[in-house]
Length: 105
Image 1: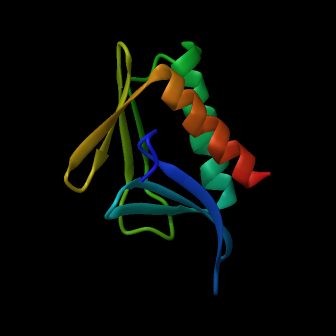
Image 2: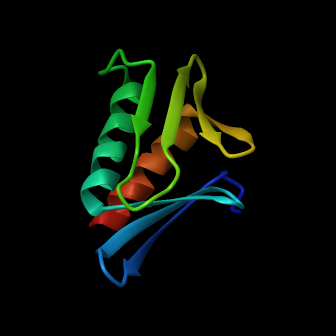
């Protein structure tokens, strides 16, 4: 895992086509459609900048067995993973949003 606590990459699924692979922990990977990745990126930007008053972001991607559950905290977000969670400060949340948007294209 990279130092930032996540990795994002474009991958090809044999049936569903292009997907965005979001790895949040060594054993916690989400596969997002481009539309899901775009929506998640926008939601992360919205809570980071204070545009949205939401305190939680939840997404159940169609091609994943896991869900994205991110709780907004004062200094960033805590994203649930299979073995607890990872905490990202607001700069890292911005980098995650940007990485998702970049892979969507």
